[in-house]
Length: 115
Length: 112
Image 1 (cartoon, rainbow over the protein chains, first blue to last red):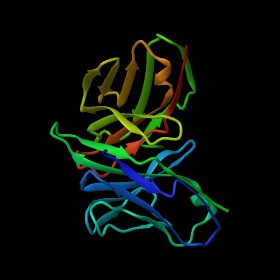
Image 2: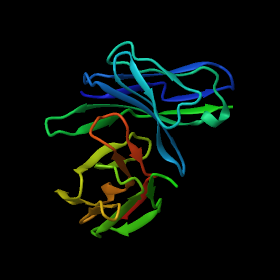
Image 3: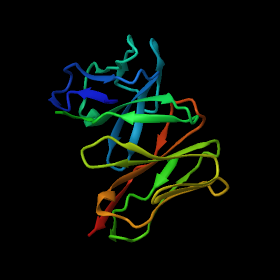
Image 4: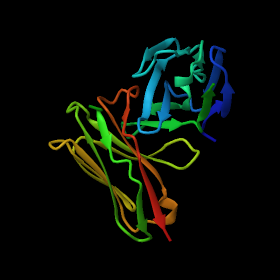
């Protein structure tokens, strides 16, 4: 089954404790992205990657790091989490389809709480 | 000003009603327009994808894009309780697969 998986699904942590949220896709997609979703603000792109070792900042990259060492994996790293990073995080992957469009597939989300 | 504006609702309609969801945007360079459906505790799933202006129909769903007014709409005919979800509009500048701009989402409830 084609899917994007994220782990963990729920995480409660304390300020300053480094954490990593993993993302993996089994569709051999070139493009992957991380978003955060907050009430009243919608989905905002944190980082995206066009391929292995190619990443770029989205709209809200401060406080986050990413890496793309393998095509299927795109982990999100919070070196020193702060309470304002409490949010619902989504990983997504996309590929150009035969109809000439990019279809994004989203993971199930990771709810992060930083106290 | 946000790039994409969407009325958050909530919107509540009886089963069978026609639903109209809308977004406005400020950047005239947007070319690709999408609607996503997000059920509670799930990730968004792509519903409709449109390039430039015009209409696109898929079953009970119709997407409209009016680039001159910077306005997009999603119509749902014969709405069903299973349509109850949050609907997100999204746009991109070019078909490069990497940057998408989302609205805040409209929460829809279809009452049986």
